Length: 154
Image (cartoon, rainbow, N blue to C red):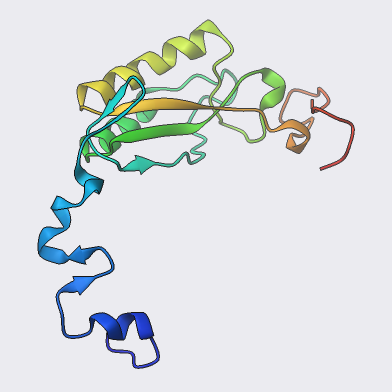
């Protein structure tokens, strides 16, 4: 942090302090302490935001061992709360190839090993349910027309 044009950098120049406080004491911040949110007991306040992975079987929307391992690794790395990628709630909710679903029993069952793996690593996981509405395309949803809450174009 030596740029004279960067006022934020110059404030901390020559010190071991950044905007978080002392580098030596960063583990003492509330970020790394457990927190209770409703019925959830999180091991820390670090959350992983949802990111579309497109790792599911494109035809069935079922997730496999690669998805189990993907989320397990994040929990093993210490993430307190993992929010899954968008999980579509109906066949017409799909906006990308390879997105997972949660509208068939096979899809629900495929998420159970993911949840179990995250819990085994001490993490908490919640599903982001998803419907892309008008942003879908008939080629992605088997020739059907996209479904949206209104006829107004996006």
